[in-house]
Image 1 (cartoon, one colour):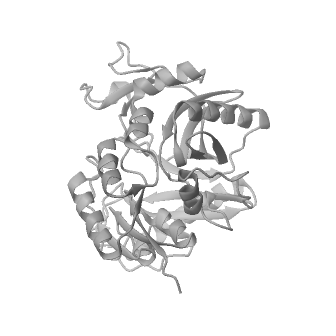
Image 2: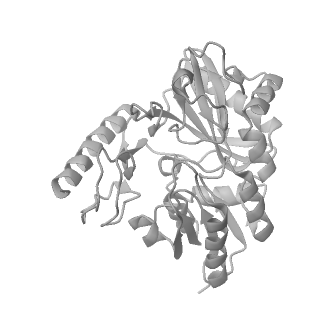
Length: 373
């Protein structure tokens, strides 16, 4: 029997990538910041990185962890998830050591430089909110975002942001429903695997924190075609490869392209096909091959992050339902506002899936509260 090919996975949370890699026939070697119960079960080997929601992944610690994992299995490639949008230099270091299956450091720099990206959108005729590097004279109606930020937790209203512009940029607020396109690209062209609608899980300090997503997004054909046209224009300008996501705000027949996330993102679970795997498609696309069309997906599916609403010094042993993922290990310390787990729901319609998600979030909170002091 031929042993599965090893592959390095580096991300803030590597569970979804590891699960998809397993389905594609790979042996995942994971370095991430959580070391969740199911991540450890999926990973052939794992190294846990220091969790720092403010400073992100430490370069030296990450490289040491990947070197350690590679020593035992000798993988030839690395796939990166969330955590590197604001540090393309780390991608460059990884690319010197292993084959980087994903966007290059130069591509990520182009995608995540806000003023450069805004100019690119103008050149391509893509509607994009007014964006500036300096603080607007009148902050009303503007948002402050961290360069390379992900997950929405870094977004503030401009009048609530720190006065320092270090690491921040400003974008005019526009109305609309949050819609994301999951895109598979080969550096020249792209296939849209589907659209999802996203929602927030706001707090007083993090009003735009990511909450969850459901697919398919309720889009009319003309709107979907218009979003697809914006994606095609973007791909012509930035040579992205593999899995990426493109975020929009949609209102009526108008849309604004907000940003490109140049890596596999938060919606892997809800777009994973019943045959094959997204990880396999990602690897093939990085080598230049795209499918003729997106894989067929049945019914609707939603996912949501369950955040702890209070400090839990030591998480008790829990009987996790099979519709949960990213399960924190027993005895873990979970601070208020940090993720407890992810919940998933499949249903006939997007509305049904969203309703089931809300029920399951409530069930998890009840389950945890009943067992936590």
